[in-house]
Length: 127
Image 1: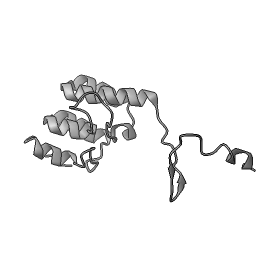
Image 2: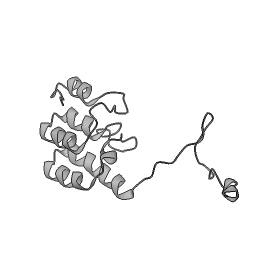
Image 3: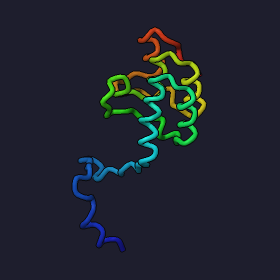
Image 4: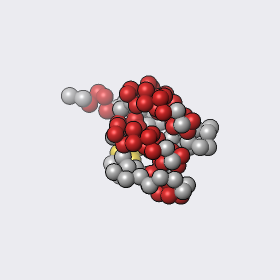
């Protein structure tokens, strides 16, 4: 019986939903987090070789997320795919899609890669 664990759950400072109770924490992989920021920086710099190398080690989940905290305005609120689309870099967009990037995932400004590309007068992303 797990009743002895109840008193320690949820942990202090753990988010709790008033409707469903404690939220399940998302497992984080520090390597994925570090490589995620490195990936965004490589995309921002147009470094196709580094992007390709980083994609080998990143999970699909790691590339399908939004960067909410960054000191760099260019990558803040972006997903890797929306950032590549904003740059008009077809090769990187294709690499991300081939790796499993979600074309419908919206960035922190509620825009898809296609919308971002169109806003920036760049490529139109197609599957």
